[in-house]
Length: 463
Image 1 (cartoon, rainbow, N blue to C red):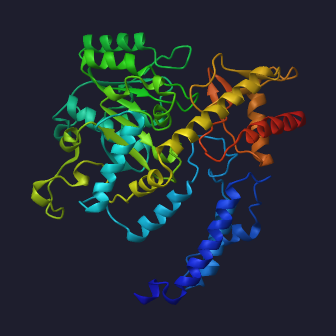
Image 2: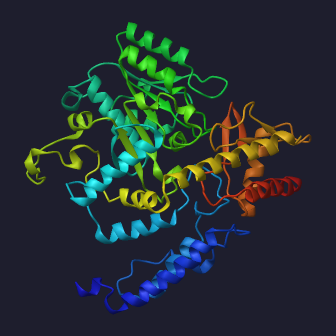
Image 3: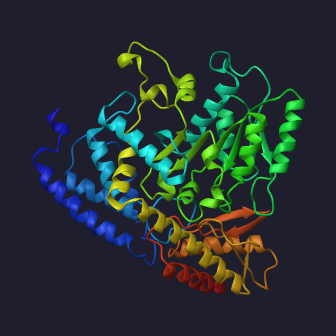
């Protein structure tokens, strides 16, 4: 037992961590000119066999920092790929504290259980999803699965025991996140149950087509389970017309889930009109480890009451005590061993205040708008026919000597990655390859946007 404690070295370990974290956080404040080399010595370290004996902890910590430094970190200001978090400093501190206490949120854990509900309520207030209750999950996949399992149970109350006994349908836009399809498969409804609704010219769900598909299914004896509206698509940041979809869901009495894993924090800003109708949804997914900046993993599924969750997940087992016959969190969630994820967001809101988050989100949106404006004014770039709704700004580089725009942008993206000053990804939009800068880091600045175009100009000349 004693051999598993740090013991007398605790002070030196904490001193080492304090100095390293000051250096690391400082290094995130500015972009570095290239990615560090993945050295032969580091590769050798990561090829070692299981160590049987002990090693000096300071040395091991130093090795771990070497690994981290040579990894792709989304916390850096010029990481513009995918939709990432940005390693909010107080969030990292919260993770250290929460991991030290190692509380399991499966059962009633007193104060931490109350804090989780308080934080979920705060998030509901922030985005305009009032009177919300919610639980923290590992990510948007699990949050979406939790919501759609609840929707399935409401539409088919016997499904928990008997399974799916009829043809069913779930409706989502053609550009909804893949986690929706994966959820449908995991829940046993089969991917053929997904109705991929066409999008309009703004890449939003076409509500007329949604109505048409629902009517076709109803006339064919197919049971609708849920409509999934996307609040910020992964490709372009489009927000489905939630208000119009709410009307359809109410008329047809179908569960409406909003997958806002990426974009829904913008509902708490001046962009709130884009999310009109959100408060009338049945459930909402939001990944705080995306656009609320805290470290992974920190997702939430929000609902208006817990009854649907209880009928979907609750159970009574001899090893799971129930005080006063009340529900434990595990009766309302998918996961059993569930870490104290809420603490990082609670500390972040308390430390910085909600207004600071609004300002940071709006800043990211302005960076996307700036990207769009610069590209629109240049002859060697192509943009979408409308400015960004949120913080994704797809751009396509053009060259008179290359007619295959997709191949050109694929090569250019690869060259950018090899160069190392920026980390960026591509997106397939309307069958073509585009560069897809995505701004979800509070550290990224206008100077980084201008630098991106300078790098593209420089590297494209080498192609």
